[in-house]
Image (cartoon, rainbow, N blue to C red; front, side, top):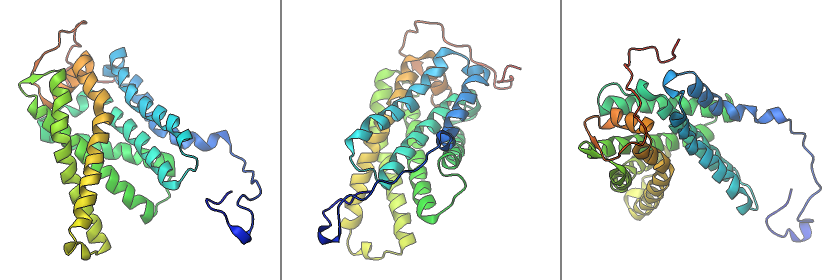
Length: 281
């Protein structure tokens, strides 16, 4: 253990080394999300194709980015570890939503969005239990729940609005440009509601007399969240435009009547009847 600053007469800055036995199996609970993704890859019949497996680019990219950025921070903090765990779990959850395929394609955009949110929270429970077990603390659970809710609602709502905007033509330019329009607006709304909830819980009434205490964090957080979600969701947008499997899944969920601008290099997958057995048994 070491102190960040010179302790002066209090003693040396660096203490004696402490050895902790760390078993290889201690990290197994963190694999819960990956186990769920593996099941979704091999069990449902509609995911037994190479095109469906390409969604793993999303969680693998986030995990690789987390590993590559670790050397940039000389001191690991609880907050930094929390952001890393949250990002990896959220990427796994969003990939799992797309692996669910036709199961979330029933009804209109509102119903699809509601089912997607339910799936995101279900994956969130898997991620929480995988990393933290059944330990519950208000200091941990409440920030995680609010952050997960804001990010999930913002992403799901933006996808529904993007699909609505692409209801006539759905191609790569539309899927790359419409998120630039909708993500900032949706993130501004979600972050504003989230901050309002936080101020109500903390019973902070001084913000009414000091609007800058709300407006500055609102602008900073919503802008950062919109940029982060755009980069985060970019693999899904590219797959929805260039991959025949995810093009069909995106269009069946959000814009079934849209015309595609892509000339497929391979025949598109056959649209399955939702009443068929998805497991292929």
